[in-house]
Image 1: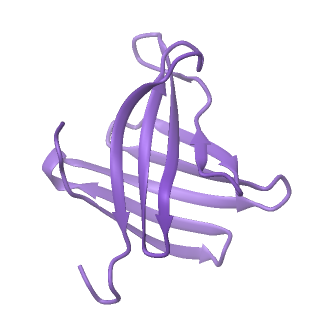
Image 2: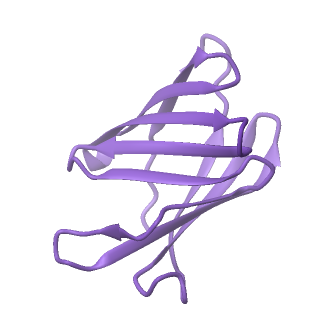
Length: 125
């Protein structure tokens, strides 16, 4: 498995409701714009992400859950793809995440990437 480093930078647009950010993975030449928002009405957290390929990803899940999924998303080749992200080993300044994907409507899931997120120290890089 390949290991690369990247950064996520976020700031609140509406405190505790709307968070905007950017993902950068220089080694892979990837960047993406990200928007998280909390809907109090139905108790969900939704994340939208668009990278250099222009593909819009929308994933959501209950605010009290560590799992977020996308709906079946059409791909350029005519297939559909679903993503499922699960946070685990959650601590105040770090958590881990695994991404799984399905091409059969969520019947089976294949392991994708794993990520370790660490909060940067104030003023740190």
